[in-house]
Image (cartoon, rainbow, N blue to C red; front, side, top):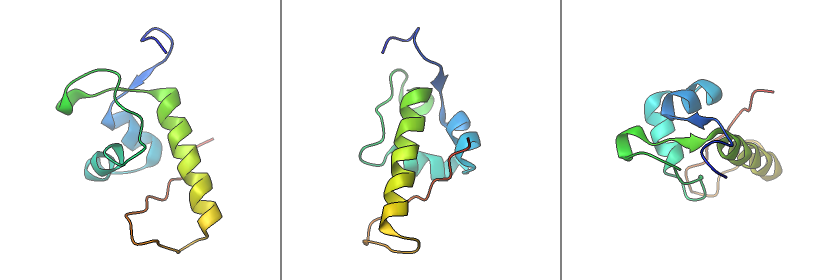
Length: 83
């Protein structure tokens, strides 16, 4: 995907979309499997909006498959994706 093909999101937009505070978004974007940033340095990274939404929806499906309240000992982010 080229930079022209999709909207870019920073941590602020990811936080607004997920309803998370800055510190929680920082942990989220550093989770294994989270899409890599397409541009920027550590403090001003940007991600493709479509890639972030796809990741969050996949996490939501995995959480639903695991069942509510079950933990496998790892940090588990429950994501609620806006329609």
